[in-house]
Image 1: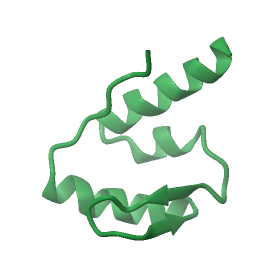
Image 2 (image 1 turned 180 degrees about the vertical axis):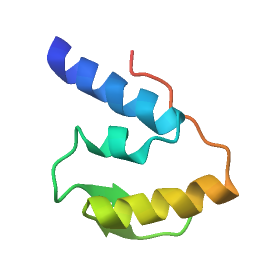
Image 3 (image 1 turned 135 degrees about the vertical axis):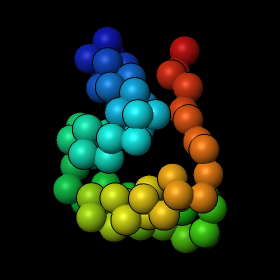
Image 4 (image 1 turned 45 degrees about the vertical axis):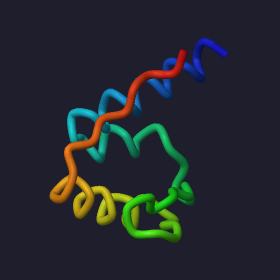
Length: 67
């Protein structure tokens, strides 16, 4: 479990730095992500990278670590 929490913390940290490659590095190739600001979902690292890029241009978002 500690390893899982470490991976999640690493992904959150990278996301907060706007480091898409760092966040996506710990995810599978077919990761499925909700498009909270647009509705629907994106699947795969390239689609998620494109979504995050649009999202980061519009919003100043950060994720907090899990407790």
